[in-house]
Image (cartoon, rainbow, N blue to C red):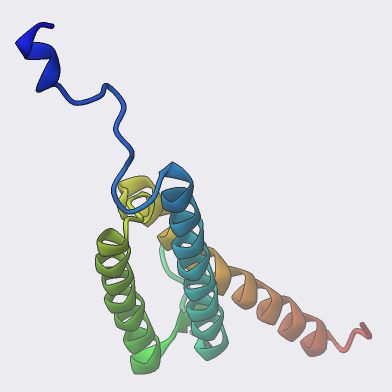
Length: 135
């Protein structure tokens, strides 16, 4: 028997703390939590948006302005803080996919799309009621 064969470890040792299936399920759970958080905060920001019409249009001919105010800024900060917290907890639990740049950008895009949908629906509803149309 050769002495160097006795000290070698097997080519495939079992993973410590679970296999790839456990990591994938943790990734899916954290992605789901982050998606729900992004959509929920986005919908809240869309609901808090206030509109006003100005007399003189800007350079592109727009006369409608919108803002979410301090509550919207607080929701945005809360989204960032919770997102960082979920990344830290997820990394400690073995979920590494939610910390990737692509997923972070995707969740921010989801967050920005949610208020856009709410604002679009509110503007369409306001335009219909202003004209007196029945829906």
